[in-house]
Length: 405
Image (cartoon, rainbow, N blue to C red; front, side, top):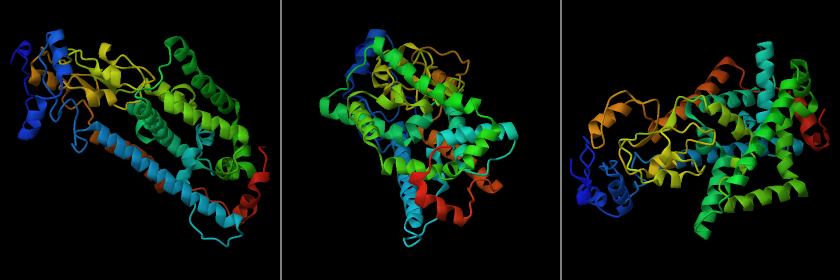
C-alpha cells in the first residue's frame, strides 16, 4: 500500500479494468477526501467508478441513478392510474356518454386507511374483504418492504415523497441551501406524525369487524375512492391553502411533510426498525470525511454510527452515493467476522461480500415484493372490486351528496 501522507491514493482492486480517463479522474477534484484521510491517518481506497468525488449518472453502480429511475417510473405509473381512474369516473358522471375505460384497481394504493381497516377485517375474520381489497394488498406490500428494506418505500416509491424531495432540491438550487430547523424545534415537530398515526390507528383498532364491513359496504364506502378523487377536484379553500402552505414550506425545509406530518411514514418507520438491512459503516475503510452525514436528508450522524437504526432513515442511500471510500458505507446485512485493517481492501471486501445491496438489486427486490403481492392477489381472484354496473351508475353521479355513515 502507498502511504497516504505522500499525497497519493491507492486504487481499489477491481477485476474489471477501468478506462484510463476514469483512472485519471480518480486523481482529480477530491482534495477533501484526501485531506480527510490524512487527518485520520488512514489510507484512502477509492470506490471503483468514483470520478472527481462523484460517480457518473450513467454508471450502473450509481445508486442515485437507480433510485431516481425508480421514482420516475412510479410517478408515471401513478399519473397513468389517476388519469385512467378519472376517465372511468367521468364515464358514469356523463351518463355513459364519454369514453369508457376499465377501473384501475391500483388506484386504491391512495386509500391507506381503507387498507388498514380491511387488513384488520381480514385478520379478525380470516376472510378477504369483498370491497377495496387492493388497498389492503398494496398496504401489505409497502409494509413488507419497510420490514425488509427500511423506509425505502418513502424514498424510492412514494409519489408524495418524490414530490417533497423535488421541492426541497428546488429550494436548494434557488437559494443555495435549505432552512435548518433547530433541534429543540425539530424533535417536537417530528412527534406530530406519530400523533396523527396514533389517531388513525385508534380508529381502526376500536372498530369491530362488523363496523368495518358496515362502512365498506355502505354507499359511501363502496365509492370511497371516488370521494378521494372528488376531494381534490372540488377542494375547499381551507384544504387548498393548507396544501399550498405545505408546498411552499417544502421548498425551504427538507421533507417538511414527510419528516413532520406523514402518518404513513410514521407507521412504516416504526416497522423499519425491525429491518435486517441498514446503512452500515466500516470503521477501517472509513476515512472520517463526514460527507455521508452532510448528504443525509434526515440529518442523521452517519459518520459517527456503525449502523443507522433510526426510524427517520428512508434508505435513500444518499450517504452511500457520496462516500469516496470502497466498502466504507453500504446498505447491508450484518458484516462478516473477517478481521481486516485499514488499507486491506480484500479483507474489508470479504466482510461485506454477498451482504450489501446495490441500487440495481434493491430496485429489483422492490419490484419483486410489490409485483409478487399483486400477482398473488390477482392469481387468487381477490384483487379486483367487483360491483354490479348498476351500483356505479347510481352512486358515482351522486358521490358529492353522499355523507360519511
